[in-house]
Image (cartoon, rainbow, N blue to C red):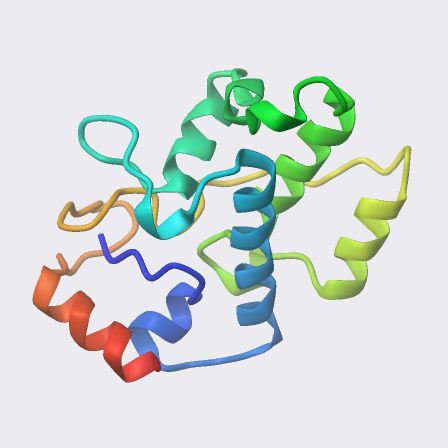
Length: 153
């Protein structure tokens, strides 16, 4: 599966850009901050998962605290941390319509009692060179990934 760092799937695969593309990028940055890991250089398992895939795996296994950056352990409130991961995962949903808009993100981050929507599997779950038939009917190659990254710059 193509893994493009901060680029939304609709931009990376189709060249379509919208405000929801920025939301996707924000979600990646948020997950990087709370995990202390870079999205583009993360491979934690076999097959290698992207940071988004690893966060999703831990979320579905109710082990999301394992994602926490060790420097946050002493000062971080668990409920706030879990909320940030939840919001990050909402922002990186494959379908732009499933992602919150910016004002909703601000409300979710600011609220102490807001109920957050359910999270679906994010885009770009698998690492480079692996396909995910649930997310893409067309396998990507490393050559295509390089081309797309160069085009996006």
